[in-house]
Amino acid sequence: MTRDIENEVAQRYDARWLNVSSLDDLSQSKIAYSGWDAGRLDLRQCAKDYATKCRLRLMRHIPPSGDYMLDVGSGPLLFKEYVEYSRNFRKRYCIDLSSVALEEAKKKIGDHGVFLHGSLFDVPLEPDFFDCTLSILTIFNIHKDKQEDAVRKLIEVTKPGRPIIIVYCNPSSAVSRLFRSYRTLRGTCRRLLKRRKKPARKKGARLYYHRHPIAWWDRFSDAADIQIMTWAYLDARMQKALIPDNALGRKLLEMIFRAEERFPHRLGKRCAYPIIILTKKPSALASRETSGNPRSLPRRHKVHLRRDSDAPRSRGSDSVRESDD
Image 1 (cartoon, rainbow, N blue to C red):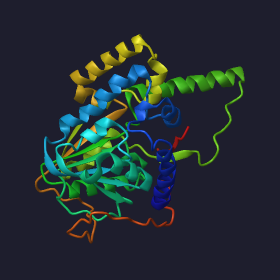
Image 2: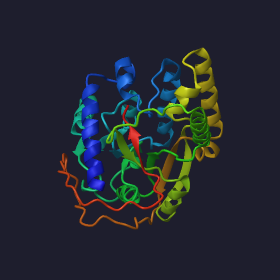
Image 3: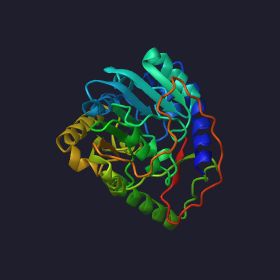
């Protein structure tokens, strides 16, 4: 199952990156917006300043300087703020399943980057090598049973005392619970009024993701100190449903941003997109170490993905497939 998911992600994102390959920044184009309106992005004018400030929020947790940064699932470095994250580092190592994405990233940072095409589980990385590790909105696209292995590998390859910064998706954010109640009520009303349901989506139209609850992250306390802070309180779908695209909308988002700044920890466990900051302990050893890692990291390493047998799904799984609309 893991390999099938990785192959699907690679194919899907190769096609997507080709559609935006001529852009320096995704937010420059309304055409790109129409192609990327898949729930994760709100590129409306009212949200532009808010989104920029949320992306820059990560800079506070990135060390002021260092030799090597690891960016897992880097994509094509969609936004200018993403490029800025490694400006004070000597090299940025970008890992991605999409070769097209890495080609686009290379156009933006050139020799500053080392571009590794393949799965995080296959790319050989040296322990205690990186001064900072990033993973922005990618870990939940890994099979639910392999996400812990992925995070422990990130801890393993990061230097002690240095941060692993992960932007994740909270399955139980305060507003999402409200929306679930709304959808339940809407479904009930439709049944009472005997309205026809919308046509079912075609099979294969959704991309796999699984969101573990916030408490799941406690398991890494043996290897790292854990902080959970706010990246963005609303997800893009909720934001577009609740916030109008006008001056009032900009004002509302300014108010939300001020609240996030004032209560970063309190809202971190209730927001849609939390920042998980794992600061590696000096004596940290990942409980599931990857065997056979070489002591040197190649400049360019391409991994050919294999398929393995499907893993059985557990009952009550929260795994779903993300809309690709």
